[in-house]
Amino acid sequence: MDELTAWLASKAGVEDAVAEKTIGIILGYLRNEGPSDKVQSLIDKIPGAEAAISASENSGGLARLMGGGLMAVGTRLMGLGLGAGDIQNIARELFRFGRDKIGEDQMGAIIAGTPGLSQFA
Image (cartoon, rainbow, N blue to C red):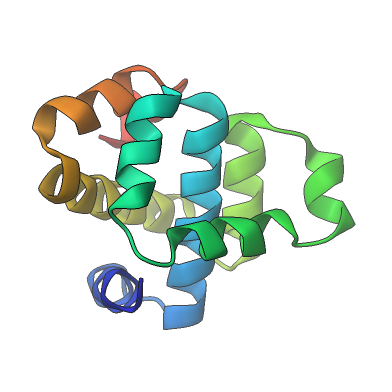
């Protein structure tokens, strides 16, 4: 996870802590909304991903009040200080990382099978 966090932070120009929280939020969304078997294979390839997802899910009452879906993810990411352009850049870099880990076909299936992700691919 440290490697992914540092890489994403440098690519997106954000602090490591923000990158790690962002990874947890996005992977949690993928787990909840995407094709579960393919998403789990991605999560399994990222050491520390489970802990990042758990930390993002335990972020307090506000996250629970916002519900789910892509809009809630965007709101949570903006709460970390990210703008729309930052979120798009981070998502693209994270998906590029995913393609390197599980291959183009599986990552493409995750993107196609998760509501709203095609705009970030």
